[in-house]
Image (cartoon, rainbow, N blue to C red; front, side, top):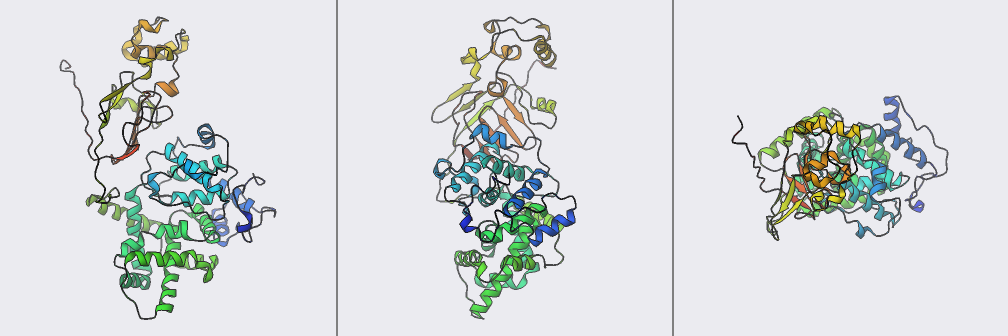
Length: 499
């Protein structure tokens, strides 16, 4: 990997980072030593060493059971690298219009960032708001052997499930409460900077809403790389510390140039002024000075951040602010789609905590606009997809044991036309990974239809959804591919003759 990492990098922009020097230590068992090396910039001048350390750190992250890896990316996108046309992979809506920062990437490597993020969007349909993703992906691509490795690295950051540890905000609620938390921290730990914001900006919270972009996006590469070193070791709190340090240095510069002549400005002007300062911070501050200032803030703990975050999330939820509000100039379009589901959701528990599909061929999905359309199980219209060969004894036994009332069908007919399509699915070899993925769900999401996409995906908060073509129902997207849920109706059926 040492010979391959950096293939996306424009080395003429990398400054004093050595590409050829022998790498130093890359594996750590002592957490104290790891933190010390991260904070002191031990890996800053050796690209290969930093790449190896990053891979160790990312592979050590505890993640969800089903986390996409490099092989998933290669299956979907292929092995090609350095895609030169970003427009072929448009960024998803959840990055909120955030562009990919180039840092020290080759011009054509920006297309690779787009390709990775596009694949991330397909594999993580529960992400609804993540403006920091372009910067994180662009940074990690510097130390990746190929796009697939970068995809796996980002996926692990998104899928990290260690209690109390978060790496990236993935919903508007989390993002907005983090902005409020930053404001609380500024007020407590940087009172002079907060006083400056109150004196100059018409909307202080609007200014603070940029805090993540200062760190992940606006900082020059040499600063952002040093921050990434510590961020991967110590987590989210590092971003707060660095953003507070940025604001401290900005206040110092602003006070020196403006003196006591402070006038109220539109918040957009203040935001632009801070952005310009951050982008040119190297003229007045070194990466070492910035980090020294960040970690000089006393009595600053992960627990304090967590408590503030929870309090702010609760406040936003009580006000009903859980999704980004659209501009009043955009009309609300109601698009109706749905599904008929033949199996009780209790069946999902048979798979334990693993997200797995279940259900029968009686399921279907539908849409109401532009006209009423129903999309049934693809095998109903194309029975040839069912392999008419006799199932093996093991498969028959497994089917009989798992399907209750079907236990009497010990020797099903070999001709699928003699059975209903719903029963034949249980007794013939279908390509189950593609054409019999009916229902799936857990505490994080509800999924209907699978195989190269989901006919319907709904997040755990019932606020956002996605729809794509899937092989199980051979449906087009049922409405706009990413949508906000204004109203969700659920109807149940009860057997009147049941006791």
